[in-house]
Length: 216
Image (tube, rainbow, N blue to C red):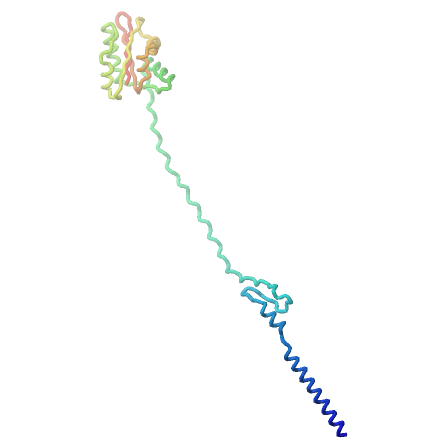
């Protein structure tokens, strides 16, 4: 009986010892898996990590915080009113061409055929032309007697010219104009740098017509 009691106590001790050993083994098992996992996971400020993921290197980016709402752009400025420059003042109208004689009209036709502007009538030159035509009719022959110099006294510019001629049958503008154009010296006056002209015929007692044409 004493032997059985001793044997039962031995079994209890062995059981307790085995339990202690089991406990020690349980507490002494290293936790390498958990520690290793934590050492390989780097959690950034914008990363969410699922710790139960068997492959912790797969990271889910954390949504960035919503930015503050951007204020709407200001409405576009109204386009500036176009600046319209004032229209240039109208150019003064060219003075009307005054036709005082048939010879003047023929002279302007000659000028137009040569690309030149017309000459307008001038009363001062007309006075000089009448005076010179009368002088020639009185003396019976054509001549220049300071006609261009008198033309300059009309104050129309610094150049002046004069064409004179006669026709035995009296007044004939077309014939005299054709004769003037055929003569280089007379044509130079017709196409000269002038702006004014005047002409006059005077018929002598014998029927000869004398013409003076003044340019200025």
